Structure formats: C-alpha cells, structure tokens
Length: 67
Image (cartoon, rainbow, N blue to C red; front, side, top):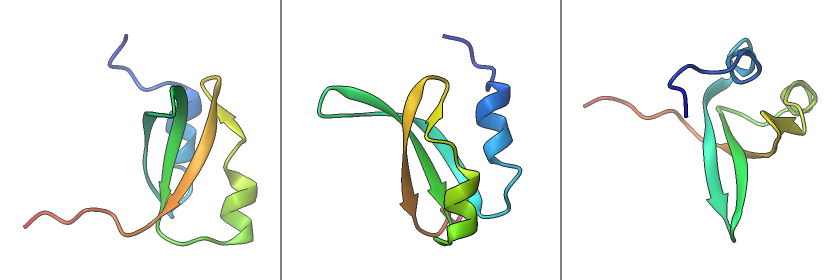
C-alpha cells in the first residue's frame, strides 16, 4: 500500500470541518472513516458516500490536541 494519500481522500480536507480520514474495519468490512468537527447538512452533502471505493462512516468530535 502506498503512503501517498489519494486525491479523493485529500479532497475531503478542502472542507474546514474535516480533520481526519482513514480506512478502518468494522464487523469484517472496510470503511473510510471521516472525522468532522461539527455535523451540519452542508458537510453531510460535501462528504461522498464512498471514498477510494470504501463506504464512508462519519464521526463527529474534536481533533486531538498535543499536550
């Protein structure tokens, strides 16, 4: 697997409320997990239903803070 982020995944970060994205596995299926700061209809419309061929799962929360 390449360390390079796909253009499709990188495009998620064009929205200021997206702070993370990565592939995760849940119940034996792979998903693209997209982390957002706040949930709005605008951001839900912005995030595609699939990224890199994986269905998206959106999680709302604050980005991690370095201590």
